[in-house]
Length: 340
Image 1 (cartoon, rainbow, N blue to C red):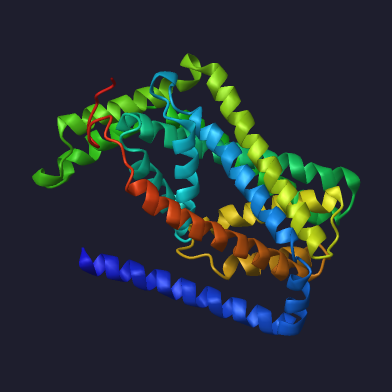
Image 2: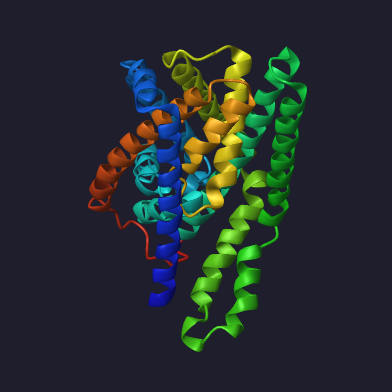
């Protein structure tokens, strides 16, 4: 186990090093003076960027809040602060899974554990689904406006449509009681001490049942959760406009929509990497170049967003330390099926 952990850490460090090296080469290509001149234009607009991100997180937290069943719904303030606290690690590790672990741990005691698990699964699924839909809608703006080359625009539309179709197909999997089936299949193959207990199987059945029946039992909450998450994506679009405008880059609606769509898809595609530092900046550099915009502007654009992420990672770390000391034990432990 130690060897595996060390190997994984080594891979993470290698990707991190490659990303940082690539970022250094891009900065050298653009020039420190030019980069500093562009970033210096942002000034006080950075405060507006931070406020926009905060509102986006609060609005999105409402979407997660509604993913809990009404009878087990925790306080909204706890859900919101937990979501922000998870930013301390979700942006630093691949796929954001570390952030979901943090959310689960910080919410313990505020809802039954199977409810926390099912709410996180629904929230993450709806988040990706709504973002994919928002990206597809956004890319139609430059398509109809004819702002960019038709080939590039159609390529983005096709990729966005494929991603949305794949995400929508996952809804079928959420209704197939996968947790219990997977655990029953792999359980007999595990060493006896690692086999899931009946108590754990009961928790898996509870999670599966809530995933399967959430839409039919709470259709209003399901729709409202989607709307709140979509509103959060609108604030992401607003952030793109603020950053572009602050940098003195083209910021017409078609350009904003295309940059939002393309960078959002790049972010999802890069989530498979153990570390994305440098890779996100490189992707924005290439996206801007492909769209006929300033590649240097693309690098500055992503660096501004990176600075925003770092700010909220620091805020999230402070919140995580505070919330972890103010835990509540209103429900039983991780394997409990107590519904209260």
